[in-house]
Length: 128
Image (tube, rainbow, N blue to C red; front, side):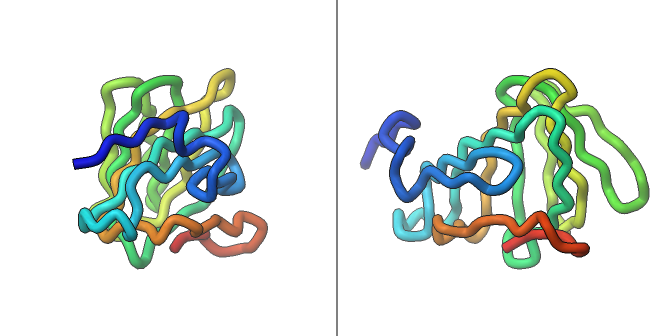
């Protein structure tokens, strides 16, 4: 057993600015659990086109607000208590709320290595 706090991760190599927010990598591949857990902050007003081709991801909202949009144009508002599941490596737009950050607990399978960063400046979706 081990315990790891968010405060322990802040300011370390597990504290990642992913482009439109922060990802605190609480559980990564090196931890040997077979899945990863991140405390993810999506900055208010940001828009990110994402697609995880090597990972499945589920995100549980713990605070704030935002939205996710699929490639068919379906927009879903995300609020505390909501989970969204990208069960088919779904390409999507992730948006922070207009006035507040969206805060998520993100679960990755397989786990992230821990150093991945998004490239949001290109024409295609960013992912790892």
